[in-house]
Image 1 (tube, rainbow, N blue to C red):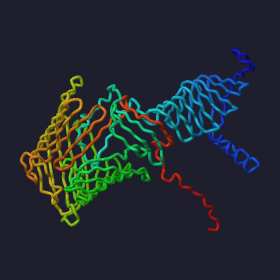
Image 2 (cartoon, one colour):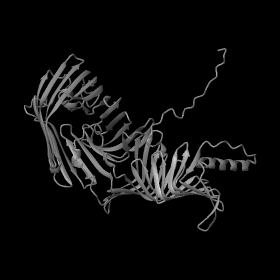
Image 3 (cartoon, helix red, strand yellow):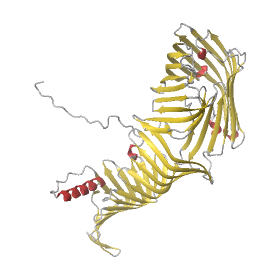
Image 4 (cartoon, rainbow, N blue to C red):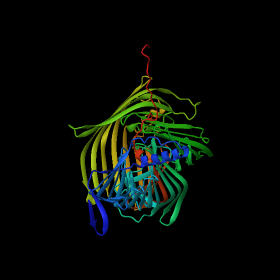
Amino acid sequence: MNINMGGVKSQELYSGPPIELPSLVDVIKEKRQETKESETKAPKAEQKEPQTSATLDAQRMEYFDDRNEIEATGGVVITTYPEKTTLRADKAIFNKNTNVIKLYDNVVLNKNGSTLKGDYMSIDLNEENILMNEPIGTVGKMVLRAQEGYAYANEIQMINGDVQMAKEFELMLQTKGFGYYDDTIVQRELSDMGLKKKRSEPLKIKTKEIIIEGKRDHDNVTLKKVDIYYKKFKVASADSIEIMSDKTHSYIESNLPEIGMIRDFGTYIGWGYTTEVPFGGTLKIMPALVYKSGAGIGIIGRYRSQRNMLEAAWGTSSENLIVQGKYKFNKNLYVDYGRHGYFDEWFYGRRQPGYIAQLVHDKSYKVADLDATYKQRFSGGYVTDYGVRESDSTFGTMRLRWQGELSKTLFEKRNPEQDMYLRSYLYTQAGATLYGTGDVVGIVRFGPSLQTRVKNWGSRISYGMAGVHNDSPLMFDKYIYGKQFITIDENIRLGRFLAVGYQGTISILRDNPDRDLLTENKFYVIAGPDDVKVAFSYDAYRERALFDVFFMVGNDNSKIKYDKLTARNMDKTGKKTSPFENFKFYKVKVPENI
């Protein structure tokens, strides 16, 4: 149908089915085939039916014969198959001569959950690329902005822009030295960075290039030539920062420096190398400077995967090998193993055996009839007493242990307007241990506990009485808290930039192996502005110091500015893959006479 509209000489209104567009992949394959045929002067092979396709749909489509263009307006949707990439816009023009699609206004590209938004996009089917003006993209929980953006088959490039976390996402990054299995001493509420507050972006990170890459077993982020500023002051620089994670993002590993203190190893500082390991694991090897009754050198290694976590350290100052490991079968069942590390024994405390290998199962239950909570733990394996060197006299035996706790809240009151909280509860704990020597040790503990918070001051005080039957044949495994004890956990904010806390257990009768009044003695200090917090904590009983650095990344307070960002294989991000996906299987025909 020929009509005349607005001075346009000839237009043809198209109202048929969605228009089939040439696939980007098929166009490239065809051009390469034509080039190859022209070089060999061979007759052109029969063109195979395209395996992928694209459709253009809209509320209104017009064909301009003089320009050989199709113009689509109103809810334009371009969908490619079978990879199901979707493009949306208010208007699109497809020039059949140049093989270029131009999209205008409210342009959105969506592929496997990642999006790219802008006001204009140009798709060159001949060159296998997409150009977008001032794009805004989302990759996982990151928002990407740039002056220009280019999209290729498996890669997105963005030029001169910034990255920040989505506003609804709150992320606190923590870096800690060796001691991953230590319970956190620092109370998290004290390191609250005011995530809901509007801030003026004091923390700024500038980098030459960011590479985001989805691999078969890992999702990796690399920052090159990094400068970190706090307000106008440069506080740190790095040639490269690498961050690695498994496909489920159950852990994060990086090549950042680490600092800490380990008993019978020493105080150390190190900067390591991180690499990928098959099946979603990462390995970090970190040379370190160590001080233990003299300066020395050491090495720390850490392996992490979704199920396994293993750390090891050795230094010349102590000549002591420390190993801590945990393998998780599920959230309730795991294996603890290691040498000279501190392992969690619940209300027995964190203990340091010589060697340990044990299977552990713990689980909590709600007791509806009592309106209470019951938790129990079973463990069994082989343990030895502590000895720094192999020549030291150590004793080992099998150990089976059961622990249980029943706790019931007596009173609970909250007043958010006044920032006040009050809770009191009763607890009863029991444990029984059978050793390979035939010794049986039993413990029963019970008492009240009071937990309060009044504005900047938080407190938890518990009193307990214990009955102990028999004594452990292993020195490291002896009960250390006594028949009467008081547990104290106090913390207070002294201002916007400083908070302090203390945790301790008082053995009232001093009826513990060392006759000590304090059998737990820990303190910590948290200092820093809203966006960066530094925490120092020290456990006097275990002679361990930890340094924690908390960064607030996201919302409106920080951005990473880049010259170039490359995102590769984003369709693989966060997706598990089979280790056998690249294996080929062949059918074998067996003769009938066999």
